[in-house]
Length: 421
Picture (cartoon, rainbow, N blue to C red):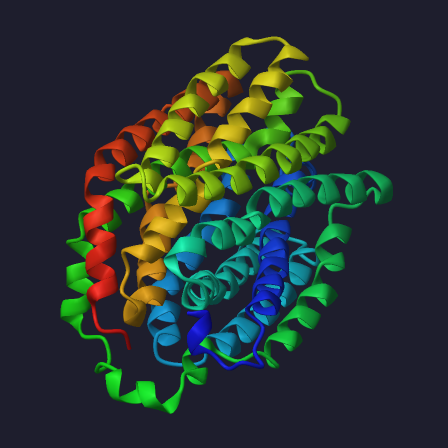
């Protein structure tokens, strides 16, 4: 909490740095999606029917390493300086992103994406838990929504930046090179930050509990709000991760010009910013008046996203752009509330591990599977059918969140009553 940290420490500066890092986190991820058609043309034969499934597996390789290493780094983050862990993680993924541009073979590119995943696995569980430590329940949703603005903005910049640089230079490699130095600078800045847990007054030492035990983690898995929220986020991630990876190819399939990728990036920025901030504000505003408000907001929004996605698939352009904008808006509306609920029902002493376990599950069941699945379906039928099949999981996510709403307030209260490490 803000009251328990050093008076000379600025929570706002910590949040700003974490937001900028998270921005580059998603820029690095989505540059690959932006230049996927060019990578496929450079590394595979034009008549290779498995080419799309193979490039889709680049996303899977990244996500497998990300989700496998996240629990390990979450465990470490609960026991050591999270800022030091973040610094090393950002440096690793920045260097690996630059190395992606050097790839002359599919195998080497696959290896670099695995390293990017390992680097991001050290960041993912640590950053939101620092924010959760710095801000009370009443403000946490809005602050975390600001942090998660990096998802739509960074993703959109990755798409637009990757496409623009590739089109202007004629090389899909250059965008990967250009993100390396800024990432290393951000990693260096982390070394000057202090972990909130290291700045508590000495009087609080007596209140500290022993190191988290296995029983604490088992109790977390038995918490309905945590378990159901994680399943809903997995269903959402299955849909969003698969669809987002293939947007450049989908726009090409629908006959849109290359500039459509940049236009899509612009839509994602605007809709994502408005939706992410609105979702966090709505969750905080309704928390004291509506039971399970964060899950009600998340579930309602993603249930609206599903028909908008279907309408996009079956509408001609430019009308399809309108439905795409609405689908993106409703998809990002749940980002702040869902992650705030995750933080609120996780005791502070195991919060990094809670986020890490969530990362493992949502990617194992979500976007580690959907990109190659879409590539497989599209290679045998077409992109419309592939998008329709995968987007159905949005409705599944919405139903799970609405069911989970009945448990959220009780589980939040229980987590706050647990002695804090």
